[in-house]
Amino acid sequence: MPALWAHLLGAYDEDSLATLERALDPAVRISHGPELPAQPAFDLLVAGRPSTEALASSPRLRTLLIPYAGLPERTRTLLRERPQIAVHNLHHNAGAAAELAAALLLCAAKFLVPLDRALRAGDWSPRYRPNPSLLLGGKRAVVLGYGAIGRRVAAFCCGLDMEVAAIRRRPAPAPATSSVSVHGPEALSDLLTDATAVVVALPLTEKTRGLLGETALACLPRESVVVNVGRGAVIDETALFTRLQDGRIRAAGLDVWYCYPKSEAQRTCTRPGTLPFEELENVVLSPHRGGALGMAEAERARMRALATSLNAAARGEEIPHRVDVAEGY
Image (cartoon, rainbow, N blue to C red; front, side, top):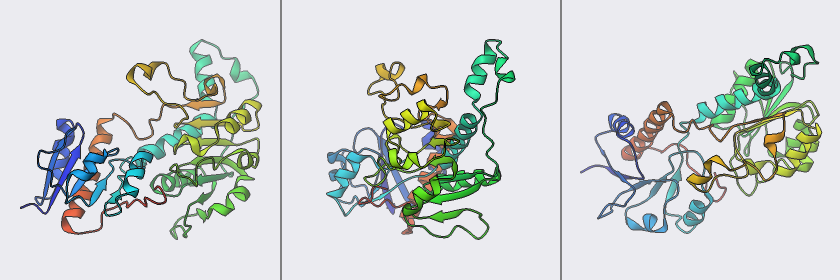
């Protein structure tokens, strides 16, 4: 009899399932599909937004594994009523999200989008006007969230010869080989005062919602770039838009937003915010692709990470990336 039965709630393609099965221990049994098994007795459920029925269907269920980073608010609400179910994430996409954060930082700091648009039309005149690009080397970068994504972003900024400070909920010293200084949330205002780059890699919780509001953004110098690959609502929408519009923040690169399509029909006609960010020349817009959504390579990485967690559970080992339901991440 297998040591662990895991049900993958949802549709999975054959390539993904083959990748998963190759990496699984023989002690792990999996079932999959958008419907629950006829006689559910699984120990572990893989789902991001399970229904009440799914969470109550198996008397053996003790672990929910969310196959991406984050804890959806509705899922969190259901789990508060079920403290016997432990929750874990996958962080397989941390590298992809960090790479996009780096791309957004450079693209915004160098104003590449308007330059590209002009040259496609044969317009070389930006070459002969004052250059609005920012030099990042020797300046300060502040990384909000020093987890799997934030650590990679911080290392990239160090590679640009930036002075890097990170904010995390429970500060601990960075590795001895790192030049990153790590601080608690109380240091945020002081660190922002001299920040040329701010990269947000935070989840959305009660404590992080609106963390970068009018007061925090007012600390930033005009020569600053804001990048967000965490969650849109961590930054107050109105405060960010008005400061970008007025030039009190030099530029921004945003992958996460305030408005999302609610149906397939809306995917081609939904503005990303309640305010017209798309009209600002100093903003680089990305449609929440930091997790490498849809990439075959990313899906294989997800399956390998899922196998690592399932194998750990089957062996009685600690499953990686435990989520604190009370905190929201």
